[in-house]
Image: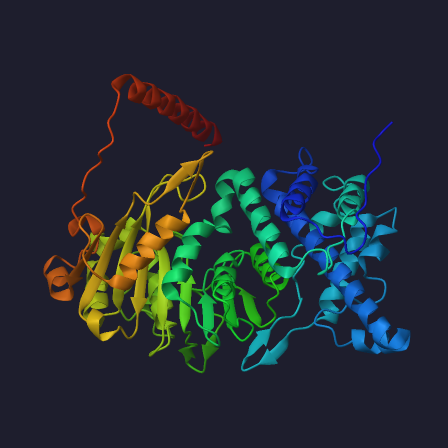
Length: 506
């Protein structure tokens, strides 16, 4: 006899660990039915649907207590998210046939009932398209009724109201799920997930302030935007007045970003789906909109982009020059620089190390140094990105530097500031603290940080690779030949396996 499912008592708190276990358990129900990379297409919309339905019920019940059913009905029309009749979670749960079609109808009804509001030349909030692509739900070969019904019952076991699961806990659970999907999906992960400890470092350096505007031109699932708000929350600073902007080329991923912000309690945001290089979403007249804080992890060295159009960019984003066709890194770089406020603007960008020294980009680096916008270059350790052993760097720029930094660049060699455990690499708080303190002190630390004047950099072919200015103290670790040989052999076997997979794929 099958074990009966247990359902939580309404308003009974859910621990974060329990929430994580439940969400991943629901996702694994799809194993064997669809590819792991497709989990997010189904689990995130269901999670969001259940959350907004439970919060709606919670708020409606409060209105009833205040003034009765008629009063509650009127007040419900003013809620941040409205759920029309027939489109509630419970309405879909009661259906036994064509469940996917009924679910899609509910999604569409909710999206249409919650349009965005135009404020200051941008659309704020709104649920249009937030549930992402809907074709998969009605494909019974891919998602038969019994699978969808089982997922709905999994989610029905838990009350996801604010009383049971506060916004900060829901946000953490959501971020956990993004990470798990990235890990499980393999090499598709990087399109929507950046190592959150690296993002924390970037937020700590940029120090967003209450009332500022924050922008991510390649926002993925919105993790960088959320981390900036987390920074304010952790400092006990008001974050509700922060204006959040993002653009993402992938339709589903942009929907995930919007869900992420809503589930983290953010309401004043504008996330647009589109190609940032081809059609920047945030403009004011003939210029790009300017922001106080910009942070991004642009796609690395893409080859398929419209270089010809960028060469004659009507937004003036080619002020340093036109990047080579094979690498669009400096196209994104210039877009970010052009999007920074002329007084308060500052940015943190994750890039491959090649942008620091490649010959074909020398003239663009030279002009960047001459403008004196480059503030700091931080070299990170290996394996901080899913399925990639590459080392990346964080580039910090400011339109207006403090007086003591003018005409200088700080280089930080943080390759050793990384911990690897259970096949996962991350920055510990002590690593982040050391890097941030070095940045704030803006001084020389042997083997770790060095301040170099712009004239020296310009005479050195405008090379801004860390290795040109900081001499490593070396590695004091002692190696045992037999142990290292075994490790080398294991890596060699793994490399040949991956090479065989690649050959088969090709």
